Length: 208
Image (cartoon, rainbow, N blue to C red):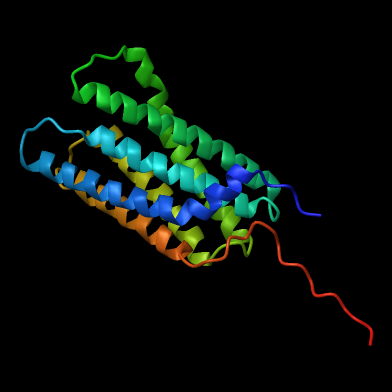
């Protein structure tokens, strides 16, 4: 007998393609803002768009875990935890971005959890990608695209750690654009796919 999947997970699973599409659209705006910052010195709401875009992506990732529960329950459960932590972490980034944009000073310690967003993103998307490839729940292209999200985020974090936020000047826009296109591609790969909340049952043999 398959596991009982909570109704809110089923709902998010159905909305996963839309959530990834919305994430991609928001991250397109985020990449455009990064390009504008590279061309001129300006105050921008980049953290707002970045936080919102990845929050939507993690909600979509959480929905994908619903379709993996019957096929790989343990990995799907761990993936769900990473998705929730990622959604909370980037929601915090979104809120802090609003505060910064309206010139409200936030205490320094409240930004510390943001350092873990890289962990949730890389491990979460890698894990769900691996689980997707190990099962037949979703198209194989989805698992590859989830890997791409993790790799792009890891590369960008490494670049910032060693070179700085805006070095080289073209990198933020390029990596931001690739992240946006990957989210849109994930949404497209899920479009018109059945929601695999339960594994297919074998046909019943009938004796004539």
